[in-house]
Amino acid sequence: MTPDGKKVFEDYKVYMPMAAGWDRDNRMMFGADRKTGYMVDTSLQPGKTVKEVVEIPFPEGVKKMKVNVRLWYLPTSPAENLDQLEEDEEKFLFFAEEKEVSLP
Amino acid sequence: MVKRSLWLLSLFLLLPFVLLPFVLPGIGYSQGEIKKAKTVDELIKMFDYSSCIQCHQKEYEEWSKSFHAFPLVGSMRTLASWASTIRLIIDGKTYPYANARRVEDLKVEHLMICAKCHLPQLKYAEDSVAVELAKLVLSAAEGDEKALEKVKQLNINCLICHQEVAIVHKWRDGFVDRSAVYGKTEGFHPDPKYGKLKKSPIIDRAVFCGQCHGLGPNFEFPHPSQCATAYGSYLHAYIPSGGTKTCQDCHMREDNLGHFMPAYRDKRMAKKAVDYSVEVIPYSYLHKPGVYHNKARVVVKMTNKAGHRIPDG
Image (cartoon, rainbow over the protein chains, first blue to last red):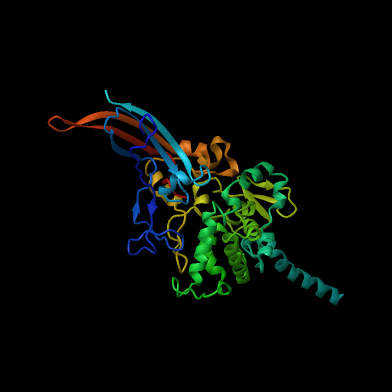
C-alpha cells in the first residue's frame, strides 16, 4: 500500500489439508462423506516453521510502502471474498503485522 | 413344613440369579443395555443432563458456548454438511448402493457416519429417529428456526463425555455403568439417577478426545467418513516432534478455558497457536546496466505451536 492508501499488490496463500473425493481422481472435495485420506497437505504442521518470501515491486515514483501481513482462519469461505467476510463470524484473525518499508 | 422348606429352597436358588446383575460387572445394566429411543424427543430425554447443571453451573456455562453444545449445527458449516450428506445419500446417483431413495428410507446406520462423533447417542435410537432427525436437519438448513432449535437440543453433553465415552478400554476397565458418572476420582455423587462417581483412567488424556477428533477415514463403516483428523496429527506429527502436552492441557487447563474448549474462535488460542515474524527489506535489483527494479522483500515465518496441524478439528 502506498502512503496515500492505494493498494498496489495483494497475494494470498492457503494452508490446509486437501482430501480427494473418495480418494480417487485427485480432485479435492469437502464433506465428511466424500473426504478419504489426504492427497496434499499444505497445513501448518506442529512444531514446524513455514517460511514465505514475497517480493513486491515498488510502483514507479513510489519510495515508501506499507506492507500488511495477516493470517486468517476461514472456516467456510474461500479467500477471494476476504474483504466481504464478517470478522469473528466468518473469518478469524490469527495475527496481523504492518511494516513500513522505504527506499534509501 | 415341607412346603415352607420348598419355598425357602426356591428362594435361595432364585436369589443368586436375581442378585447377579448387580454384583458381577460386565453383566446386565453394567454393560449399558439401553432401550432404544423411538423419537428425537425420547433420545433427548434419554441423555437429559439437566440435573447436572445445579451443581456444575460453571462447567455448564462454559460448555454451552462450545461447539459440543450444538454439534449438529457448529459454525453452521456443520449443519450444511449434514444436510448435504443426507441429500447425497438419497439422490440415488452419488451413493447408489446406500439403499435409500427418500428421507423415509434412511436408517441410523446412514447417519452414523457423521453421528459417530457428532451424536454418538444416536446408536441408541431406532430408525424412526434417523428419519425424524434427517427431516429436522434438512428443514433447519433451509432456515426453519423451530427445526434448528430442536436440532440444537441434540448435543455432546455431560452424559456423553462423562459416561458414554468415558471408558475406552472396556476389557481392562469394564463396561460403562449407567448408574455412574465418570471423572478423575471415585466416590459418592449426589444425584438421584447417577449416584456413583467412578474413575475414567483416560478422561484427561488425549486418547479420550481422540475417540472423536479423529485419525482419518472411519473404516468401520461400509462407507467411510472422514472429518476431524486432529488426533492423528497429534499422534503422528506433534508427538514425534517432541510434543508433550495433551488436548486437555491446551484446550481446557491453560487460560482456565475449562469446558468451553475453544479453538480458532478464541483469540487466546489463536495467539498461542502460531508464533510468527515478519521482516521486510527494500532493495534495488540491477536488471541490466543502468536499470534498477525496486522491490520490497517480505519474509514471513510461521511456527505452529499447537498439538496438531492447523487447520484441523
